[in-house]
Length: 54
Image (cartoon, rainbow, N blue to C red):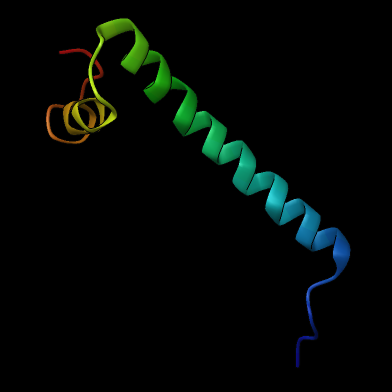
């Protein structure tokens, strides 16, 4: 039976989540600034049209 997560594994997991979040958030924010679109429009273009731009 597995015990509770150790402190080292918790720190690794939090760091990994923060890294993934930054890899996703930075390009979306940059597209928001460059194309002057709302975040919703950027996400719609990315998910539906598979592109960042308008």
